[in-house]
Image (cartoon, rainbow, N blue to C red; front, side, top):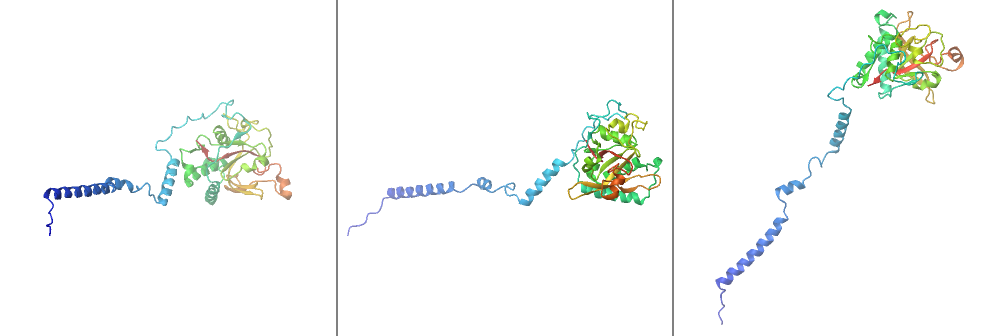
Length: 307
């Protein structure tokens, strides 16, 4: 029998080294495929990438709310308009026979509900027509104008809306002039044609009893700089605020209710304006459609005026 030769220590060492090198190479390859702690963290989606849909909606609402919120710094107040404008420059409106209504952004249905509630409260007080107490037609207008700003918060936002004041714009002609100078008064040449401009929150102005006008201008209505009736100008005699409107099937206004200080015989209350309705009613009041009985509807404004 031939004795088996044992491997020399040199070859044993050489073989062991080779095995070790192969093993280390495989280990190194596997290590490269395992993400490090930082790499693993980068593979996990961040909170912003795994938002709950509800959270996304909330953020969108918050973003929208932020856009609509009044700025923290109050905007600079516009230069005040003169109290007594020159008769040859009563407004920035070029055409003194038309004017224009400001764009409305408030919910008219909600505004109408609030105005009805305010009217009910004022009616319960049985306010007599007394000018010295601010209970004439223009005084009742100012009461409603002030109350609606408290009851409907958006209208009380002084960064968005402004209004005539009791101290400077006391009578109906001054109020109409204020709205005209602030581009929020429409002069009514044809009440039937303009009837669909009448909405809850419309301020309605009427002429003198039994007088019928055509080719109406702001000068005729307000007598700028004087604001009294002088026989020729200053024809506005009455003011009220629309609370509700009624429309026909075609969507046209056929009548409306208005809140106003009425006269020495009646407490401040709501009444229904005239319209060209059916039968004898149309014949009786056709002279002043949508007027205050025998007073012609001559101008309209929105109670609120955007800044």
